[in-house]
Length: 533
Image (cartoon, rainbow, N blue to C red; front, side, top):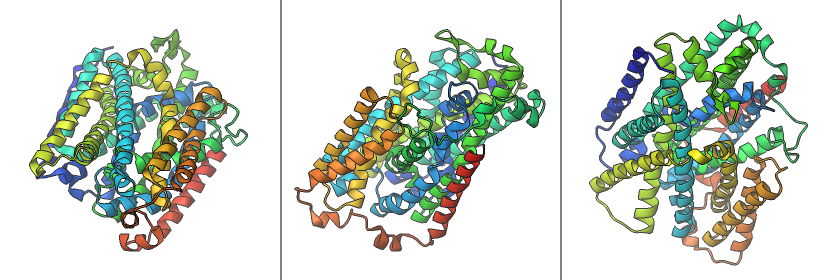
């Protein structure tokens, strides 16, 4: 399949524009704070939109519509996974982000050194670096396959194009380039999704015809009958409770997310960015899930479309249904815009990852564990070099996951659920208790991970979203018990144990209680929406 020259012009102009933007934003960079935190002068709205752009990956844009329209047991039931987001934001706004801001850290794992020791910090940082770099390589592989098929360029060219452009603008512009490029990418991506929905509805004969043509059983978005211990991963309880622990871990303990939240002007802006995420994420997800409704209705009316999909293991690859629909029906120029949207989804995931990997390597490995000292200029140049290094590593990974990509992509959520809960447990041991120690926390981390692995291998009937909660509880409980006999450095503890009732009085200029109520109310509203579907 070949794109028109004008579509290629749009794609190339966009990629060049990203580099030009990064050069513009790099003006005035003097030190690591400018590079990794954007000088702490970014508003809440850009950070909130940037965060959503990173989470709205290519797998979401292509996989969610395919899940809604075609997957066995699929449909709008995926929306249940979003219901915990507002409540997770409340927890983060009270317990985690205010503490990080007070400590003035760049790497979120620096908190673990101040609360526990260097070994705890290094362990969690290296775990993050390995998981995130590998997962990003898989993401680059997946979108490169799609881009290669839809544009006619080779897989190698697609990988190299994605990697090089992202590395260039990220290494030059730093966190500011990440944030503002993600804002642009989010706008382009949402426009592409919206355009596809409009055209699909038009071809189906209107909104009412689209709804009537879609399989009514797939409209069901709420499953309270199952408890998630019967091999049903898409039940309400595991997706809500497990999702709550997942989102706290992802937004509050993952450097690729936290680093942006630390780039705001104040802790109030950080909280407002989290508030916006809690409100806006569900409309975004329901939009691209509704795209799946439109594609499913179109295929019902035009079943011959299935023959256009390439075969994978003898079956149609439904993940390519959206881009092939676009190429078939969109006019010249609009196709280029949607292809830019696919590039954007991949680049928004890659740019934040390599910047955060650079930050953790510099702060946690070189400066903390190895004790290296750098001047401001040396540290800035070293940070840029590490961004190039990690961008290259993630790009190279994309060439070596091909033979296992099918199983890896299918099980990425499971792999994340193995580690998210135990990682969160380590942070909660430090923040919510006074007696936890570094060795106890690490032991709890290992036990939580092993427990989840046992469930995966020997108790497959337990829904994988439950692992997020199980791993956290195991880590917290055993980590605390093991720490009971150890001595705590009380002088050190007073700077790192978070008494949120007292400390938060000095953090905020805004009374956030009404925002907590709004988020809780919004959580109830979107739950009612899912029940009503």
